[in-house]
Image 1: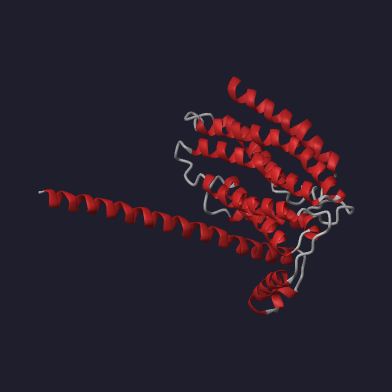
Image 2: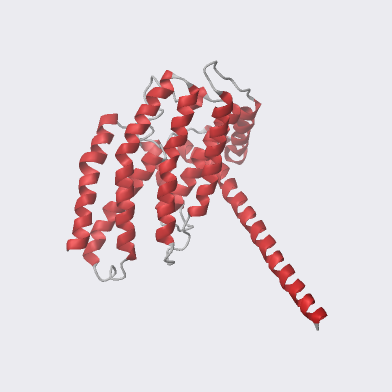
Length: 304
């Protein structure tokens, strides 16, 4: 009897152990597939920008210039690291590596099922994650010891103070509206939901530092910021981390639907269509208009 019982315990143990191993392998494979989406996202962006800007070279070469994309990547790998005497290389490399790890961890906070009641917790964790992102760029700029990076750091902090309040406010209002089970009967509240989603989209673009809100690298005196001050390993780490965060933003903006190609197309189309906005206009946009409208929407939702 004891022999049967011990065999049964061993069977349960190995069964649970196999399930654990399969779950870990499935999680690793899923993360690798999501990380492999980053080069595809970059290639898709370059293809669309080539179409919008009428660069016919992308259509002449074999496989729609896919090998040109690979050649550019190999060209970056063939470069060598160039560091100024003012750089603190060890701390700079460490924080760039932490930024990439932090970006990969952000994939854990994606709420893929909005019918689940836990999506509110996922979004709160995502808000906490967003608040840490400018910290990495500020630390990177501090250890680069460059006056041009210092100007970009001041702009990023001021822009962060502008859009962070509107971003958090709009997400909280959106979650409170979606959590209301009587929302489907109140059709007039749907008109409040549309501009809030639009403001959320603008705030995400500002957080992702995409055109026309890439003011950290903006203006002629900054000379494209990270693209000229970094090389090889550091540039690849920052570039890879930024596109992982962009991938996360696109999924969150499209309300966690796997069919997020529309949102991806809008992101790339805006980059091809618009130029950088004037810095003062963006500050006024967030503080004078968006914040006032979100405050009005909050009282409109609860009082009417």
